[in-house]
Structure formats: structure tokens, C-alpha cells
Image (cartoon, one colour):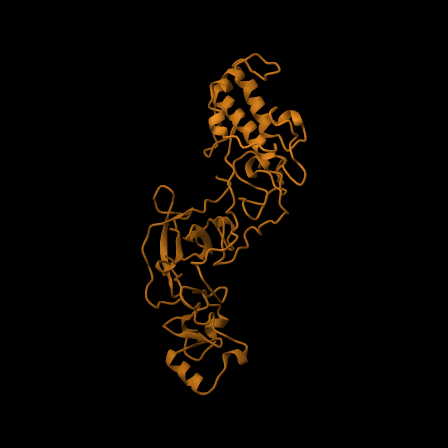
Length: 367
């Protein structure tokens, strides 16, 4: 199984509920005008059936609302209010939170929006199909150069090298093919080159002037920077290091918080900021999110799944409500829309349930 849940599900289906259809109550017989049974039974989306409207904890006919207003009834005074006050366009009501959310708004700070560090391998790692990744001597040599160059750009004062261009130059392969010595050659020995590559990749910030290019003559800057590759979890040391996923829990960019802040440097990059971890699995509906795994109530079993993380506007992912179940519909302003995987096929869980999400129906207003 893949360790992480991909968040970039694609929208491909059509609406399966339309108009003013509202979420069903748990017990139909209790969903009558003037009763509170719908609330006591726990409405799934804070709404009532049969075009009834939730007011003061009761499912009521819209016509009766005018009578309440004429009688001077004040919802605020009663301590009970409807799921959402009328929302100003383009905001939509999120009944689960009883708040209006502007899905068109681009937040100033978005979890998971930071610079993604490119995974540079050394060979021997496992790929997505759990097969060993095999690199040639030349590929391993190039990657050793890329890792060295990236490290210097991170820590050496004034270093701004175009690593891709530099490591494509002929001298790189020539130096790797030399006999072992001061120049660091490996004489076309793949195992030797892989070891050198691994050593560079595992290198944290070290105040050693010899590690920066001679033309700079300055030691690496390590003060205030956290960078090591001791990413650990309960299973084993370094189980999450060098896997291409950032696991240090940083707010602006991380896939998980499985290890200590700054301890997954090869996958996350150096940290020179105060620690600010994302509460994994607790991002509420309507809030910006980096992936579905971070949304509250997320499950790979669509029967019990509660949310998805999908792009809504301006490449901003937000947690949206699941509607995969046969008895799940979406509140007004949302369409229950089918999802597909990266290959364009239906997104199906282990029980054969097709994934569906309540997607905002007013995104044309975001432009």
C-alpha cells in the first residue's frame, strides 16, 4: 500500500442531487413541522427533509417562518439559531460547522503550499510498487553531484548554482570515474558511487569550510538552521527519511508529522523557522488543506469517510464533505460530484463504493 493518500482526486462526474434537495433525517416519521425529532435524531448535515427548514431546533414549513417573525420571535434570544445565517455570495453554508465559508477566498497562508523538495535518489530505494530502484553508474554519479550542489546552495554563503546545468557537464562523469583518492573517484564502481551519493544525501548542516566551493572561502551557515535526517517513527529509525515525502510536520509544507521538526532534511529541506506543526487529521470542512489525509473524518472506506481535499479556487485545496453513501446528499449550493483517480477511472474503495464529494456549485463566481 502507498504510505500516503493522494489528495489530487479529479472531478469527472455529474450531479446526483439537484435543486433544493436537503439531507434526510435519521427518522422520517419524526421529521414533521413543529417537531424537534430531526435534531434529536442527529441530522447528517444539519438540515431537514421534505423542503422543511431548521429553525430553533425544529423542522418547520417555510410558511410558518413568517408567522414566527410576525409574533416577534427572536432566534438569537432563544439561544438556538439555524445552521447558517443567510450567506453573502459567493460564500456557502457549511452546516457541519454552522458557518458561511467563502470557497473563492485565497488564504494568505495555506498548509502544504510551500516549496516541495525534489527527491534525489541514490539507487536501492523502493519505488511506488515496492520494487528496488536501480540506477546506472552514470545516473548515480549525476545524482551525487545534484545532492552536493543542492547542499551547497542551502548552506554555503552566496552559492546560487544552477545544479542541473552544472551536473550535466562532462567533468562530473570524469571525476566519478577516476580511481579513489582526493578527487573522490570510484573507478566505475557502482557500489562505491552509491555509497558516496548516500553519504552526501544524509549530510546535515556542518560548519566545515571545506564543504563549500573553494572560490567562496566561507564556512557553511548553520546557526538557526535545523537539518538532519534522523526521521523516526515507532517502527524504526529513519523509516521515513529519504522516501520523497516530507514528514517533519511543518505548517507550510509537509506530508505528515511522523518525525521531529527539521529531522527529514533530504525530503523537506532545511528548517530556519520556528516549529509550527499542522494538526494532522483535524482540518475542518471548508478550511484550506494540503491533502485528504489531513481533513477531519477522512477514511479510505467511503462508507464512513467524511471529507476530501480538492482544489476549489486558485489551486487552493479545501476540505469538502463526502457524499458517497446512497443516503447522503449535499446542502444547497453544493453538487454531489463523482471522483476519478489519476488515470481517469472511477475512484473506488475496497468495498466497491464510488467516491463522491459535495463540490461548490458557484465556482463560476470565483473568476
